[in-house]
Length: 487
Image (cartoon, rainbow, N blue to C red; front, side, top):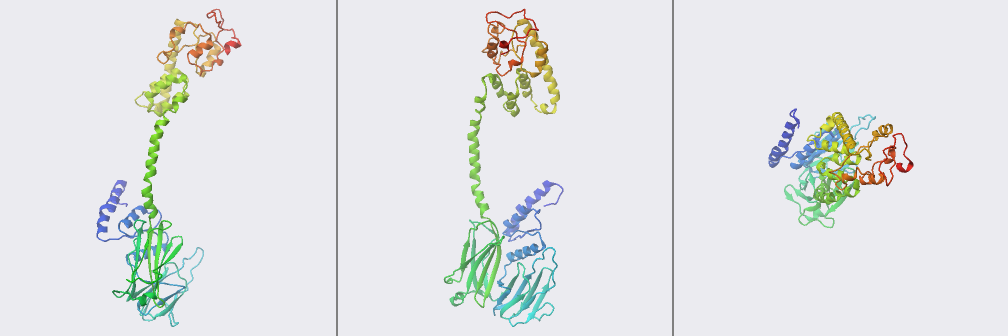
């Protein structure tokens, strides 16, 4: 539906057509047989028109397929009684008042030229009928894709066709003796099968004479789009007493379009009925079974969600307990969960905690450069403040820094006292009063402050301590510590 430049207007109109308008028309008996001329057509819209009105839907992407689509739509709307064509021949009985032969030509392959050879009809007496020479009871129309020949009061017997017969060729008849077939739905499912009903009528009276029905065989055949077909005889042992041949088609191997043919052969009498129907059984089954897996998947996710939360807890090391305590405040931000694995500096942790608490996280994306500058300034001020505090408390405190960019600075200034970063609120278990005493070796002090994650072997400025003495104030900055202190 394309009635406006606005997509909303088009959608509203499409909804109105498929709803109110289509419902009213279908209630009045209207049937739609839409044909899509190419694959890009709105097949969903056209198919809905057909399904809700009990019509048929076809896709015709070539001129030949378009002719067949129109013919199928016409036959679905007004089924016509036919005479079967077998080996370019068909039999006309004495009860036929008129027959019409619609003969399609074979499709011309690419690179080939069409031959002007015309179609010929050979009567039972051997006389050939041509388009150029027509008797008074013959009407012959020749088109580019087909020939349409109608003959009234035809001779009884076998008629032959001389020429190539294309797909869809058929012969329809007008006769007092008719084979009547019940309506065939455009679509069917396993729950709504096709009920096949066949009977013979002489004018308006049903034929139940067993002598007539005994010589007639009724055969039902189905042909899929890929050419696979199957046949079945109706009432093969004896004719039905009520003269009505019945059968039910409720299941087929695969969904799709099928051509249904019913052929009655009585030696001198033959009739054929053709219809097209679509099997939609698998679609109906999918609707009833698709909900169960979805419900199961939701149940599985609900069971796995609580089990997945404690997984990171065993993986956390004891030294990272302070960071685990701070995570709940920023648990809603996925980035805050990933950050602790890449953060090694407690100062950086504080900076990131402040950033995660910002009411507008979009600043981290839009003003990343400005935030980095602010963080660098905060780190510089904190370091300067803590250096002054450490100089007042003790000049011999031993602590390590985890930033890799301080290694060059420590190599040049080996006598400078390392910076102590207190963690009073995060590690209440370690009293600060033991920090300035330094009564234990440097290696024990490192374990006390939970710095196992930092590489202490990179700092060569640590002075040598004796287990019984305090720090040697006479140690000169230029002296190199021995191997034991490095370890």
